[in-house]
Image 1 (cartoon, one colour):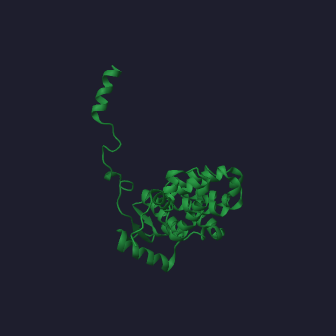
Image 2: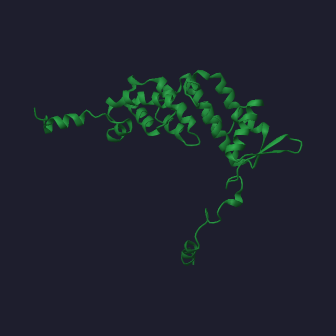
Length: 237
């Protein structure tokens, strides 16, 4: 028997059965309501695999605007938690803009909005206290605590050259022996230095950057090139 010849029509049908990735579905036809289940499954996949796709999540929220009866508040809550974990990126606000106000008034979303406000204003003690009351929301997404701790350290690094141990402990919600182990890891892997403060206990010296050491910032980074100024003088004259 000879080899089976695939006719052009059969070949086209086979090509059509090749599954698209979620990213491809979003890129090809982001307003197709038929992809809504795939996007919802992808949110759950992001949660379980600790990955993140803002574009896919925004696409799903837009589809919910056109298909409000198909909205899953559980999925929306997970999207917002993942967006919080992406701070300092403005993802939470971008997502919240696409969520109807009536949905935002539900208790779980009001809580997430409060948590976002605390993070944006650097009120970490209040954040952790509020998060502790809402563990059923935030603990449904693995990696949440670690992501917020990383954000808190980012904020501290913008402000402090040397941060007192109690300030760090409050910001990342770690104390005692657990904090000791955390600091050991940061010293070994992230360039942190521990030193004794004057009557204030331990100080943590954070890595130098242009934010906590302005002298490291390039002089011309925010300046106006001289040739631009030279062009202005004749105009002013």
